[in-house]
Length: 256
Image (cartoon, rainbow, N blue to C red; front, side):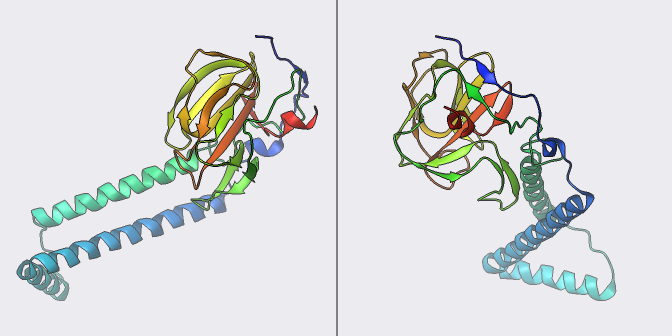
C-alpha cells in the first residue's frame, strides 16, 4: 500500500473550537432539564393513579381518603410499600432521563457542542479519493447545525449522504481496516486507516463486509448503507480525520 501524504496543511485552528457555553446557556439548559423532570414525574404519578383507580377502585378510594385527610389537617402520613415503590420507579425514570441529557451535552467536547479537535483549513492529498457511494445526495453538511432528533445545537463531525438501504459503500482511498463495531449513536461503523495521519469512518451501516485488519484497494466494497444507531433514515455518515482532527470531508475533493 502506497503511503499517502498531506501536501499542504497550515497548522491553524478555528477559534470557536474551544469556546465555552455561556452562563445563560447553562442556566437555560438546567431550567429545561428541571421542567422535563417535573413533566415526567407528573406523567408517571398520574399514570399510577389512573392504573390504581382502574384495577382496584377500593384501594384508590382509600388512598384518596388518606390524601384528603392529610391535606386538610396538615398531618404527614407515612407512605407504605406501594407508595415507596412508585417513588423508586419515578426516580429510576428521572435518573435515566438525566443520564441521556448528560450524554447529549457531553457529545462533541467538554463544555461545548463544538469539538476541540476541528480543522477548517485546506487539505491537499497526494492521492485522488473517490466517492464512497455510486449515487446519493448530501442531506447534512459538516459543521454547526440543529440536531434533527434532539433539536439541540450540535456539531456535525462529517457529512450525511442519503442513499437507498443496502447500497454499496466503497473505501475512498486504499488502506487497512483498523476497527469495526457498533456504537449507540453511530450504529454499525467501519474505520479505515489510509496512512499514519489519515483516517476515514463510515457510519450507520446496515452490514459491515470487510474484516478488521483487511488490506483494501481503493474502491473496494466495505459495507452497505443502513440506518443503524440514532438515525432518521437510510444514509452514510462519512467522517474524515487528519492527525486526529475532524475535517470537512468535502475538502479532500475540492483541490484535485
